[in-house]
Length: 372
Ligand code: F6P
Image 1 (tube, rainbow, N blue to C red):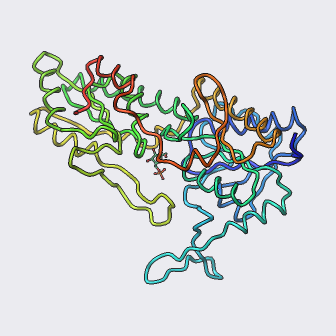
Image 2: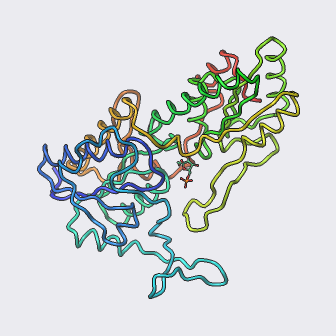
Image 3: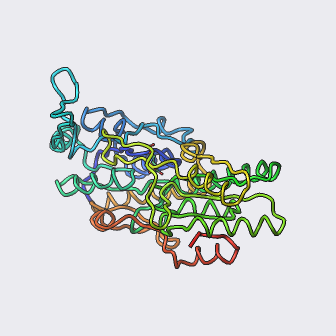
């Protein structure tokens, strides 16, 4: 057993349902089973830099299991290894119009030491966990827990938050279907996921999409149009198209909504649904509409499945810390909770959908077109 007395929890990156459920499980296991002191770090790495620690007790985690979001708040702007330099008034320093960065990681390490933190629990996706790996390399006792609606983290079958988002997408497609039917329209739904199509694939199958367009399978819009025209000719007078925000046409490019200069991951995707809807309207000679599901996919209450998974992850994370197995992330493999080194999680490209996978084949058996 490692000599652990006090732990800290940090939630970083885009929020997602299940964060509070993990916080609750970590606090309960740490306090009740091991008698540890727990603190939360507010607003992710921002709070680690600014020494923004708050006590977390059994009282603090009451009534939060079902709530989406994070009681600790989050930030997807603060990479302490590449942190914007600021002047004495707090203004970001620029040179030739560009932000000047510096490495602020040692200040964070000092803050953890001063606060007497023996282990740092980081709940995050690839950006947050890349810093987690780098803090582990600096000797911080890091335990990671895989969060993201994108499900694109390596080494784990599922991240928490994904299941809830799939349910939201499925529900949204159900809603789009009723209005699509009334008006005989093609409805194109844009779904989050960055460069991975997990959310669109699962949500699209669950929501009975006719077409699913993924970043992993560049599409030919003419093939999509042919599928829809065939369906229309056969008497189905509407269509549901689920398009991943990172999908792109063969020989085409992803559609970028904005570049966030102040973010470690500056590209924000968005706009592909409108492009696809406009093209389909013309090619199919049928009215089409685009809907961006957006942050609705990240909000609301946490699904029962994610509450269970998050609770399992939280408990397992404390056990890992007590065994002194730092620099690792808890993972789900099949139905078992295991752990993997952050070096392996972060050291490769994000996990993507395999176009030859069983689930893609299932979708094809169901008559879903991928535009390939
Ligand atoms: O990584 C989670 C995610 O929701 C992505 O699916 C999406 O592309 C991105 O975050 C949106 O980021 P933001 O909340 O900064 O707009």
